[in-house]
Length: 121
Image (tube, rainbow, N blue to C red; front, side, top):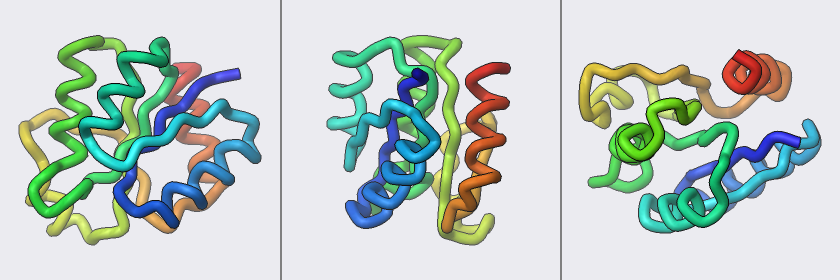
């Protein structure tokens, strides 16, 4: 069973995504901010996929967290998610690196396909 770490500052969204991924039979770990995500990541590795909200707070970008994880492990798979339109998402990009993206609200069939493609390559 693949392990997925989901990072979102909204606990309601986090609970919904967790239920969806558990329904798809993934082992799900959760974090609500960058520090908690890094702690879980370092403690629970290997993690097959990290799903990160683009906007973790007004001043913390999910892209920053993703970049930090890839500095630790360049092979780490990351999927970004956002409920904001692309022009708002662009404000939170930290570099030119792009990550696969899914729009909230998540559609279970789309998420299932994306995760399978990312994990199984």
